[in-house]
Image (cartoon, rainbow, N blue to C red):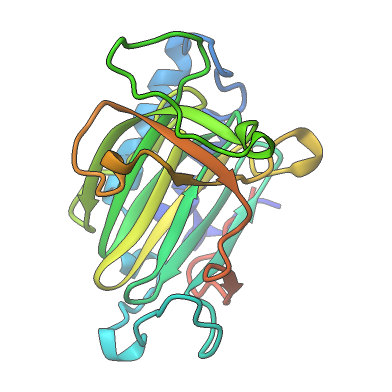
Length: 254
């Protein structure tokens, strides 16, 4: 189906088409990005920089529209909801909406690329790299003492950055090798961001979402950059779950 004139001119349609072109053959973990991929990715980042809440027909929610989320709160709806826009074998695109005080816990994107852009409000994103190679910095902290059954869940990682983003910020980008693990916190009220993941999560293709917690005490505050930390894989935190709501914006067609 070919999109009609209105969709051809919508920035959401243009983003989807550019994402399809960008992620037809993206570099895998450990591979160097081809020039053509970098050129397509640059165009996608430019489009994502332009998009605004009004383009998706999103109405920014106020703090009193979204009651603060308390730990282990299971009443009053989910702390995070998702608006599905479109999905292909190459990528998925949608919008995450976080209530005041909500967080998307530290999680990974196995073998995946991603790009997110804040539509309204403010988020704090803490990004980590997984360090697979043995050895490393002589200043790296020793792994914390754990029962033998939990040692296999340890992951040596690098805290790369903690930044705040608003609708005026550029997009936040991740790849299979860089900034692939992140935690996203709503700051000073409700927030929403547009999100593209390529390829989509698929447990049947070794792309399941895994959650982690920071074990190294010095990093719990997450204030410094490029520090080695120890993460432990955990089950999905009980105070986090994601609901769904309809997407109100322009339809995307291919």
